[in-house]
Picture 1 (cartoon, rainbow, N blue to C red):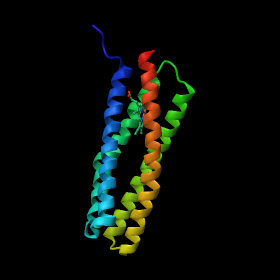
Picture 2 (cartoon, rainbow, N blue to C red):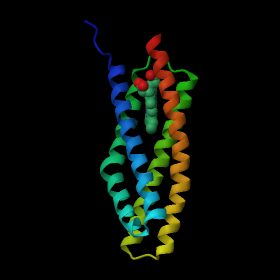
Picture 3 (tube, protein in one colour):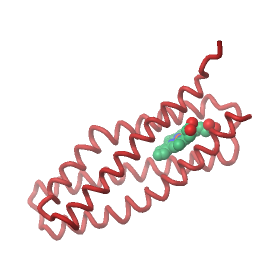
Picture 4 (cartoon, helix red, strand yellow):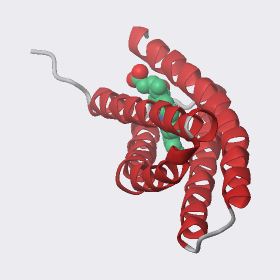
Length: 156
Ligand code: HEM
């Protein structure tokens, strides 16, 4: 009977965690946009919600993705230049995510200290452009290269 190799098992867990990150990201974009452009009374709730989602869901998911990714690197037989590229972009993405999480917490403390509404709106807009756009593009690159590498490992 064929058994699932450690690498394939790690790849499945890695992929599930990546799926969780994507779902989180989409939901965050939806409620941040909603609070900013459709119902301004929701903006403060969006700030609180984003902080909760980051703390209890997204940060653990990112840690899990980095750990499973690291284990995969350890178990790989050959590491090609595309692997280095994929891993480099992945590390960049994880670092940018933690910067995004830092901004999210900073904005939450601004809200708690009754900061001016314009300051909060500016912080949300900055986050939308810098984090969602840049991290969004990086996510596409990392996911496509990850699939490409896994596909070629499996057919070889
Ligand atoms: C430090 C963090 C990370 C490291 C070290 C890492 C490393 C790896 C490695 C070694 C592979 C397997 C390549 C192969 O099969 O030859 C892989 C696959 C993959 N990675 Fe990552 N990764 C990291 C983070 C991420 C992130 C943040 C994402 C996307 C949000 C991501 C998306 C993927 C995808 C979609 C695959 C293909 C999985 C499959 O279909 O089996 N990775 N990663």
